[in-house]
Amino acid sequence: MHELSIANGIVEICAERAGDARVIRVRLEIGQLSAVMPDAVRFCFDVCARNTVLEGAALEIIETPGRAVCRDCDGEVSLVQLVGRCTCGSANLRVIAGEELKIREMEVA
Amino acid sequence: MCTTCGCSDNQDVNYTIPGADTHAHSHDHAHPHDHAHSHDHVHAHPHDHVHAHPHDHDHADPRAALHAGMHGRTIALEQEILAKNQALAERNRGWFEGREVLALNLMSSPGSGKTSLLERTIHALRDEMQIYVVEGDQATTNDAERIRATGCAVIQVNTGTGCHLEADMLARGMQQLKPPPGSLVLIENVGNLVCPALFDLGERAKVVVVSVTEGEDKPIKYPHMFRACRLMLINKIDLLPHVRFDVDRCIAYAREVNPGIEVLCVSAETGEGIEAWYQWLRHELVGQQESASADHAV
Image: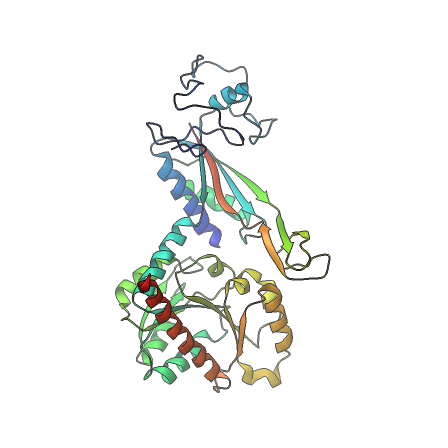
């Protein structure tokens, strides 16, 4: 459950920036290849936010689909997991999207 | 500071309008922040509604900006969630390089034989190099006791509910263990093929151990781990006659995930193939010393 560490990190970062203000919304970007489950983050976030300025804040998660460029044919393919193949058959892929793990913004009251 | 143009304001918070391509405001803002309307008026629509429009719309329209102002301040963060761990990991890395200490992060499923591998390694190389061990487990000091029995300095980090070691845990471990310059620090992470892959500790290389009593498809089941590692050790090869484990297929799977991964087949029990692992360690130790002196030269 690394999502607990991740949720803790989110709360820490936001609380530090919010100061005394109450945070009402946090928007994350989590790539679909990042090995982090949005549902687990949501669950842990509520737990970690308790007794902080983030308590009760809404959590929005943008899930970025995985994409890769083939090193052999330069084609672009979409990926649902980290292992995949290009339409040309090559497995030599460079992931260009889907590994994001970011706090985009937050809204304070 | 404003993340869009870099301008500063008095309160060190950003009033950024996300999604806008052009950043129209001057430093004495053309659109005042003390809006003509008061913020305590009653809205025709409640504030906790669900928006029909997405928030990543183009805010170039000034009415949209006005609308955004009614909901509270949006602060753009654009921050990597793991940035704090990453920063601490880089500090560890610098600490290790400065002391020419080789730190390796060993990861695997529970029961792949990491501790046995360490025991054998310590016995074989103790006269040749100074070895220090960090044992990561959720509970018990059993593994640290096994290492201590070899006479090697060891610290146990119990992560409690945590499923992996983090950079600050390693930093604290090093404060207590105090490995001297030129030594080898072997970090046995919590047995887990998922989470430890995400948390950099500041090691020179990550090493994954797979044993032949597991499935040969571990690399494609846990691709993050195998992609993050520089070396895969296939352990317990003395058991190959008794199990259905296709070594070549396992290696092919690992290379599918990580074309550059190095592979060594060993038995921590019988010592078969283990000399190649020792050679790898010697080579890395020299490499760490060389990169440290290269840094000094700069």
